Length: 176
Image (cartoon, rainbow, N blue to C red; front, side):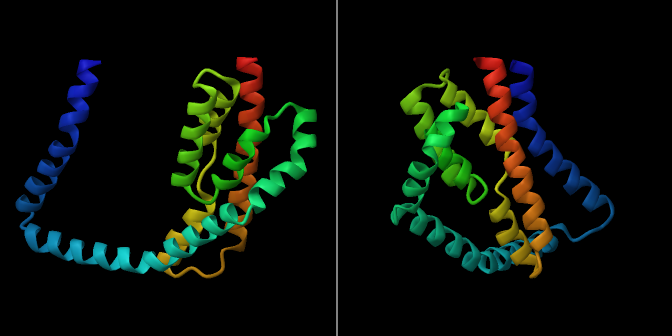
């Protein structure tokens, strides 16, 4: 374990040093390239801001309006019939939208049910089995100017749905 810790501590500075040595060897103006890259990064951050703000407002409206709780209450009988706890539904719905919000929900589930509970294990597995599809499409596609993202959205949401179902099946088989 100490070897891994030592490697993880030194790997990034070593990569930076190697890049600087190679750039100097090839006579690339490293400082000027660094400053130019920093300018591009700042411009990229400003161009992403409207997309992030729109997504955060959407999540706040979904949670604040009570629509999420109403939906969970509506599908609870079906979930109980198939053995899926209703507590996990908000995580399944929010995970494709926001990774940070999903991580907060996972933390709340683990704190309230325990890390070794079925819900804690399911939340952890679901967190690793799905991705933030809408976030990726909104931010990254928006940043490079892709407007037509229908097929990517369909495939991403199908992959998320399969990840959710697979995590329920795997956790049920392994931990029950």
